[in-house]
Image 1 (cartoon, chains in turn red, cyan):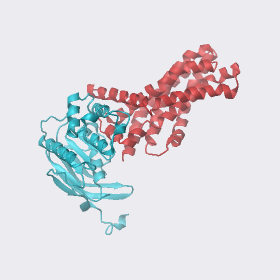
Image 2: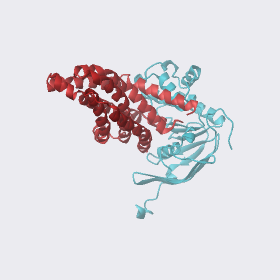
Image 3: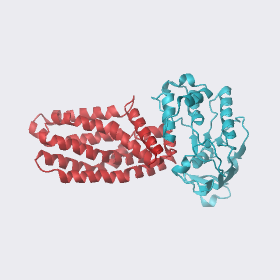
Image 4: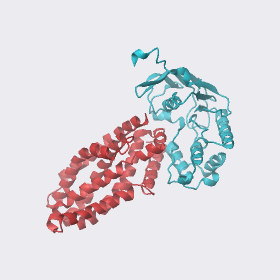
Length: 226
Length: 227
């Protein structure tokens, strides 16, 4: 990577983080959704500590996944609507690089705050003390796959008005492996079992998404430009 | 035929041979051929829907060249080739401005996206001065009128240094004064060896070749068979 592409890449990441946290951005929205939606579970299920502890890993992961999903439909759509996508396509970085930069920015601006807030929600859900470390680590390791896979769906639905539902239908089935490995790891820790194996598979899922995600997103964005 | 110049990419002649474009199952134009040498301007004329914007987007690399040849110097103009896309600045109907950012930030972000570097303040202020926007540099774009947005969009031609300008209806919504400023900017660019392709309905006041897109409309009466 030459100096200029590195400058473009970091510049684009900074731009998108800034836009995500400015007025009308998705950063605050996803975080608020995450906090509120998890808080609903103790009300719905009832305040029995044992039941809450049993479902805590799954609830936190599923809601984190949904929070990520509601922020995804704006990933490329805002740029598509105001014409910035044309400029992005003319950048010397190339569309795959642009997609990777936007995915990085999405992860840092929208998903990382969820990871930071997750221990608080673990407390609320009576998550066993042994599982906190694994939960945060599994979120750090697994959520990049959510952004990467989601980016492909967002790029495919960029020109669809109200594409959010279609995006969910496309992306949610692809999230299943990540969810299974992640919750498996947290459950293992909660039950005093070594979580290394599910964590390794979770990392593999993220790496696979890293290989496919930017390239597939770029190809889908090319279709949207036509 | 590469010229040494102040541009970030080399200036080479752009040559189109028998370009055709299909969109939505319809043949938009066919047999479009032209040669554009450094320092030349090409006007695209024609009624609405005659394919002016489509041709510009084709040259910008947003659309695939399905038929015909598009050459930039000795290189084929492939869609999405990052090295060749470095030669183009495109300004379309959408203004590509982020409403929450100020004009200065919008311009800075665009320059960084295209070059990886920040644009010096003096360059930016000089560019804003051309279209009488200097006093608006630190205003968020959401407060701009549509004419101001359009001028903000045209400002990119003043602070980005790329050889081939693709302008889609650059004069829409411009008053006489700004139209003159635009003409001056275009003349400077041509004098520096740059190239311009502009789709427009009104004369801008800069000498250039003319390409009437109506000449390339497919003749459906004769070729109904293939549809």
